[in-house]
Length: 68
Image (tube, rainbow, N blue to C red):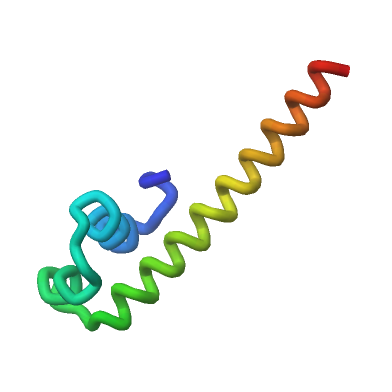
């Protein structure tokens, strides 16, 4: 996951979800606007959800094909 996100987006994502920092705390630490942090989190989450859905679909299809 982390290797596929842009470095700054990855950092914001990790700060929010793993360090449990708020968007305002992240914005202050990185000297960027809170709106930028929010937009980066939305973009990262959307990408991760889409990637997970794709991998899940492939796993289900593979499981189905190996049983039939």
